[in-house]
Length: 211
Image 1: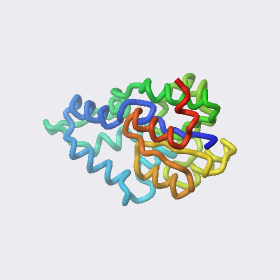
Image 2 (image 1 turned 90 degrees about the horizontal axis):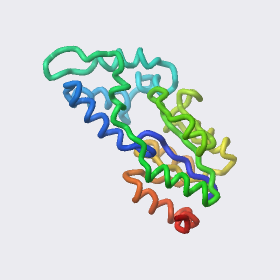
Image 3 (image 1 turned 180 degrees about the horizontal axis):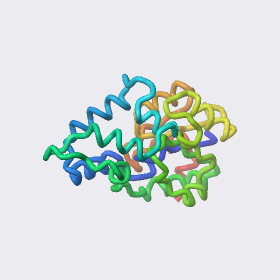
Image 4 (image 1 turned 30 degrees about the vertical axis):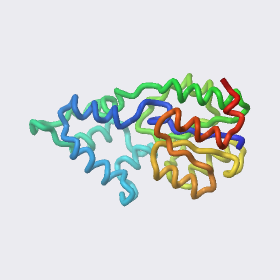
């Protein structure tokens, strides 16, 4: 293995689901209304061109997406959801996962390329910190492609200059893992830092020798 590609939200950060749960509770939103929208816009059977797809491709602004999402949500008291800042509130609970950042640093120290591949829901990335560690950085809205489109995996491989069988991909979403495997990459479904480190150590033996 010559390279490791990491997702951002839910991999280098605390779980996205925990942030969503906190947001739903704070805004008094019925969880089932958000789940229904998420399934319709991002589920395996979602038709192409949903608002989430368009947001991730950079075709829809954050303000436009906020308005569309807020209009579909239901509150416990029957009142409207404030559209302005919906995505900001949704992600407000995300925090960097120190153990995963340390893992990325250890991979670099072991001599491996480390790349970032992220489907973006707005530009909330810590750019300076990412640039210091990850190369390349491939963000869906900036390249007009999104996971699990095969083209975005080809793009990151081209920018890394490696073949698929020389690369490991880490993501917290099963469809993205399946897409990577279909392209010939090794893939690790992320649940927590310790499990991911152990899985990568079997593929990247040098990792085990890095303190």
